[in-house]
Length: 292
Image (tube, rainbow, N blue to C red):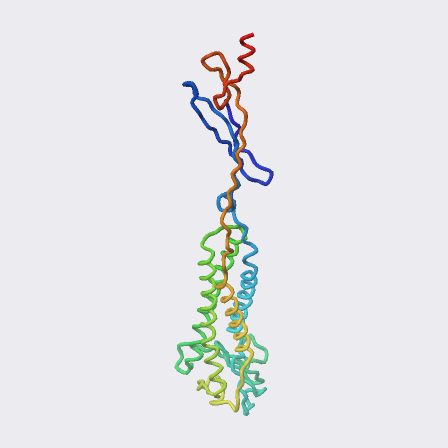
């Protein structure tokens, strides 16, 4: 006697047939019954839906990308320190900009190749006159871009696993991504705060004569380069905190419902010529018909 194979219930539950066997009068008899087992989410083998758990982390990835971009822009800007000078013989506008890599000013007498009315000189980290805050900005800002890029890549990979329901150490991946974003923010914050302090305390830089810069400015103020870098650092800090606060959803314990339904088995002939059912009880109707 054959039993039906695995079936599917109306709600997607798996119905598993169960075969029982009993011995009656020396012969084995098989009875079929269907047991309906409702499997929980962890037992059903299906991938859990996790996309709704990472909406904040998706926003954090956007913030991190914007913060990383602002950090890169800040490094290329020349307006970190704005010097106001009184001698306008060379510096025609009376304003000079000191950046991380260049010193520039508008001049009608000195024009650098590739510039119309601007003269620029490049600052090398190996030069003796380069102050430590500028050297720190040149090194740490590059490291910040490298670490922040790794953090953004890690966040993109982890969100990909979330939206494809791939549970591959999501907590550790998000925590690592957040740590990289926070580290990138710290690396950029150090030179930004250092140069901000130099501007506030009106510290000067002894440039060589070929830079055509005065020994000291009349006054100086914070340029847009530091402001842009600060904005990018704040965004990186916020995104790192959001990444680190990711939590997996709490799963309820699987509930198993067992429903057994006995199916009638065909009668089996016993040794006395009568027919016996699945449970070994004689069928009186067949016996009376036989005596007739």
